[in-house]
Image (cartoon, rainbow, N blue to C red):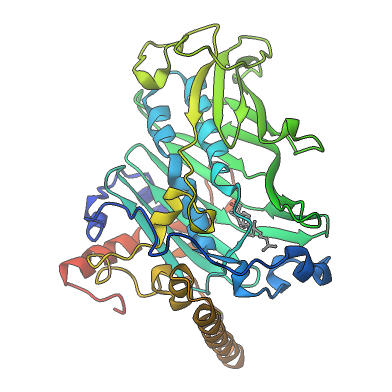
Length: 431
Ligand code: CLR
C-alpha cells in the first residue's frame, strides 16, 4: 500500500509555492542582545537526578534555550550547500566526501549549547523554507512517550529524511544522548539517476558538569553508506580526552565498492574538514598551506579532485557571541514575520507562547505557559485513554524503506499541498 507514497517521493517536485510567507530575509538577531538567565550551578540541580533520562527530569526553565527539539532537527539544514556540491560531482567517491562532510557538519552547532531545548508537544509541527537555498523542511512530533520526531526535507538535488529519537541518561560524570534513528539522503547527481545514502548519528554528551565547566562532546563511529554504488565512508569522532588534544577530532576514509580506500578525510567537527585522494592507503591529513591546492568549491571542475594535497571540504560558519550561545542559523528558526503568520500551520512551534516568551527574556511567563500547554497535553492524553483512542500522526505514516528494508516514517507531501491551498485562500488548515 505504501508504493504510491514512495512513487510520489521519487518524483521531482516544484517546491517554489511553499516559499510564500518567506519573502523577508532570514532574521539576524533576537529582540534581546544578551540573555540574562540566572546563573545556576548545573551540578547543584542535577546531582539528585543521577540515573535518570531526560524525559524524567524536571528542570527550571532557565536551563532551557528558546528552541524546540524540532528546531534542533532543522539545524541539520545549515550546511545543505554541501549536498548541492555533492550532486554536482560526477565521481561517486567525491560525492561521498561531500555527503560525509554534511553528516559531520551537523555537529558544529552543538558546541556551547548546554541548555535544554523545549520538548515538542504531540502533534507539534515545524516547517522551515529557504527560498535562497531552494529547500523546504518539515518535521512533526509523532510520539510523546518516547519522544519521536519525523522529518522530511527537500532540495532541488536531494531529499533528506529520518527519525529523531534519542535515549538519554545522566551518569553524574556526564550526560549521554544516543540518537536511535537512521537518516536517509536521496541524491540526484548530475550524471543522472539517483542514489540513496544512510547513516546514524553519533553520541552527544555533556561532560564537565561536576567541575562547573560543562562542555558538549560528540563521539563514536559513523558509517555513511551509498546503497546505490556501494561506496562507504567511515568517520571516527574521537572522544574528548583528559588533554583537549583529541577534542573535536574526526578521522575517516572513503572505501570503493570493493572495500579499497580511495580518499582520506580528517579535521575537526567544530571547525574544518579536509580530504585527499589516497588510493589504497590511509593518509594523514594536514591542512594545505594557504591557497596551495585549488579547492573544488572555488571553481575546480575537473573530473577528479586535485591529487596529493588535502583540500578544504567544509568550514564552519562564523560564531559571533549571541544570546543562549545560539548560532546565527539557529536565530533564524523561530522568526515569525507578518507574511508567514497567515499561512503557517497552527501547530507550528513558532506559535508556542512559552518558547516565544523565552526568547523575549520573560522567563517566569515562559515557565507558566510551559506548564499550561503541557497540562493541556496531559488532559488530552487522559481523554484519549478514557475513550480508547489511539493517536495517529497527521502528516507521517509508518512504513518501510524499500531499499534498506528498515522501518521509517513516510511523508507524502500533503502538508505542502494543503499549505499551498491555504496560501491561495482555497482551504483552511482545519479542513
Ligand atoms: C543531537 C542530534 C540528534 C537530535 C538531538 C536530540 C537531543 C539533543 C541533542 C541532539 C543535542 C544535545 C542536547 C539534546 C537534548 C539535551 C542536550 C541539546 C540535537 C543538551 C546539551 C543537554 C543540556 C544539559 C542539561 C543538564 C540542562 O539528532
